[in-house]
Structures are given as C-alpha cells and as structure tokens.
Amino acid sequence: MKINDTKKQTRQLFIAVVVYIIIAVALMAPVLLVAVKWPDYIWFVAGPSLFVDLAGIVVLFVLANRLGKFDTDSPIWKPSAFALAGITALTGGFIAGAFIWPEWIFVNLALYIVVMLLGVFLSNFWASKNLAFNCDECRETFRANIMTWVFSPNMGSRKYVKCPKCGHRCVARIIKP
Image 1 (cartoon, helix red, strand yellow):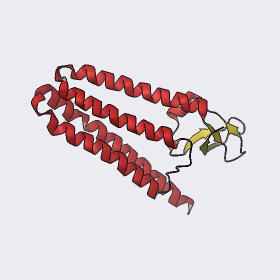
Image 2 (cartoon, one colour):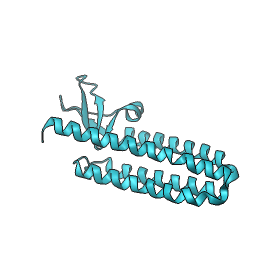
Image 3 (cartoon, helix red, strand yellow):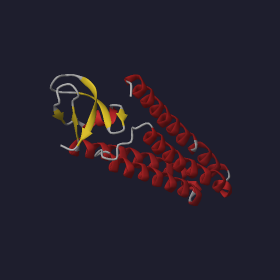
Image 4 (spheres, helix red, strand yellow):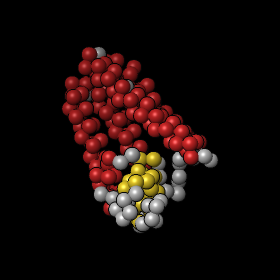
C-alpha cells in the first residue's frame, strides 16, 4: 500500500469520525427541544436519536476495519470499545432522563456533560499510566503525559506524538510497556 493511500484512508476515517460527532451532537437539539416544549412526544425523537447513535458507532467500526485501521491486537482496543459502549449508554441514559423527567432536562444535560468529560479524563489518565509509545525514528519506548493523550491526534492504534529522546514527531504505535 502506498503512503498516499494510507494518508487518504486516514483522512477518510477522520472525516467519518468528525461527521459522526457532529450528527450525534446535532441529534441532542431536537431531544432537548421536544423534552422542554412537548414532553409527551419525546419518544418521537429519542428512539431515532439513540438508533442513529448506535448505528454510527457500528459504521465507524466497519469503516475502520475496511481501511485496515482496526487493530484488535493493539492494547488500546479494549479501552476504546468500553469507552464507546459507555458513551452510548450515557447517551441512552440522557435520552431516558429527558423522557422521564422533562422538567430536569438542563440538570440532566449538565450531568451528561460532566460525566462525559470525567470519562475522557479518566480514560486518558489510565492510558498515560498503562500505555507507552515506540518512536519510528530511534525505536525508543516512552510514556506520554496526560495532556499529550488528551490533545494529540488519535489514529486508532497509533497517536501523533513527539519522541522525548530524538525530538522526532511521528505517528507512534501504542504499546504496553
């Protein structure tokens, strides 16, 4: 496979992830609107919203598998699967909460955002303590701090990082130290 093909495939996967995130967030607006204005009809938007959320996750996994970006031998595979399952369950809980307690919709939304951010922090904290990288240039094995885990681009079983030994920026493979 040519390098240009790999870059093109990575770009396609990145675009798919961004589109999925935009759609998932955009689907929250009708749920909020209906929950506040017409709480008796919340199930009209809540069911399709949850279905699209689950379908989007499946489509992303299938696309990543077809593009060869889905490495089940990677140590990041299981935490990623648990994170996606948690996001889906949290979204389902948000939708159910909007249906059951429509008068508490904004408290529910605030709780949803706090739990989501807490999950991102905890998963990246775990990764910074339990996973490492291999530099493509000097073959150094190194750990990254939590800020690198949060803010550097993620590419499946790889992450764009800077090697502390040689200073080379590369898409390093995530490994167990």
